[in-house]
Image 1: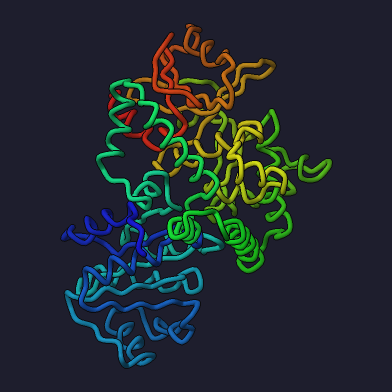
Image 2 (image 1 turned 90 degrees about the vertical axis):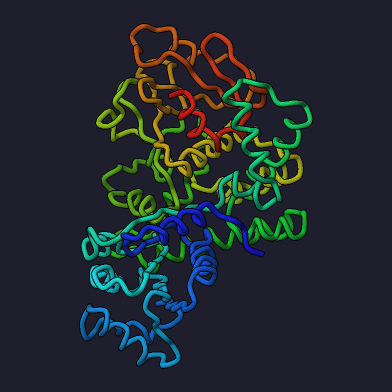
Length: 444
């Protein structure tokens, strides 16, 4: 069973562009990169040359005699004489390039030669991407892939463009969902939160209709991430990297969700963890939410680098990392509120990142004024509050009404309620977060 992914349309457009460059697909392991690339390749090319530098170590010599195309394909053919190269009909897939980053040096030659299309892929867990980038700068296109988002999950469940476009129209037209629509989408959303978007986990759920085996699969993925830290994180304290990764769920459970090293180790200082968070971000296994110095535009350069929050880019993996009691409540009762709203907040962060929206928050010093996220239109900064209860949105109201925050005219509140608008605040159900970028474009 192949699940439709958003990269599918991108790959078709990439191939149809007559001036397309070699492509590098980046992202954490087990998010479906190889499956999607091979699905595309087998449908679009008569000859597919697939080389996996982890499984096929004999190919780790193909540039030993030079980086020109003829030399490279000659060495590939020496390693496997069954491989055939047909000009104009062949795609070469270099997979797991973190094991053999020198292959990126060939991309300039392949681009200039033009006979064969090339796609490279590799997990960001330890990938020597600075070297890969410097070896191929100007001669490649990058595409960052993530685990399945809520829209892709809906596709996997059999929902089509009509239903998904209906969600967008409800937001734009400020038309409340019917009780039936709301109940169905809320149920699907809660399933998605618990499962996350790892294709193997979603596949088991779609095939069986249950969560059976999902926790075990998620736990194994997290263990694989930690194993890759030990394998690839050279020159850094690997134990500290793993400690940071494991601490994220507990850090999000705090009232003050700002990441604090003292919560990992008493008296710990940030300098002792230099490079650890950056490595995890580059690996694609955590995402960073930056604290604004002041809630105003432009956002670039308006960041306090000493303050940030960390999230898991897949809420299902976050839930799988919780204690057994929370697991039971979440999987049986689907009660995401037990973790102080951290899970809803993580889901929104995940949804924003997968749409290409930046992650920003604000916490005013010596004040209770704090806002979970910020998005923007062309001319307006919009605070976004994620509510795990029906308490008043004091900070959101203060940001809208205070003249000191001149870039803010409206706010967005995501929670367990229907579509609505009152007092400058747009309200949407949680599951609408995946449609935020399209909604913001409609405001422009």
